[in-house]
Length: 97
Image (spheres, rainbow, N blue to C red):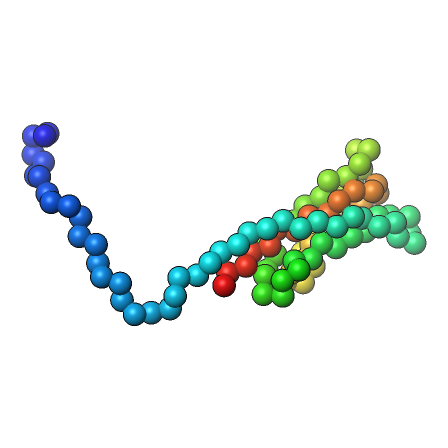
């Protein structure tokens, strides 16, 4: 025991009160392939499949050192990418139930 410290009993755990049930949180990543567009670019949208989920971020993985011209949210549930090379677009989905 250190000088100046007091010995205490076990911590007190408060009783559960009535209220909403605990929530479940799910975070998933979904992907889609960038498709060749009429203007010569590659575009794609990855969308959270569950309508209750929300996109919290996104990104891409391009082939052959490609560059993305646009990487942005697409509504509340998706992520959009426009690039100069084929690749994959990703969206991270958060679902709280």
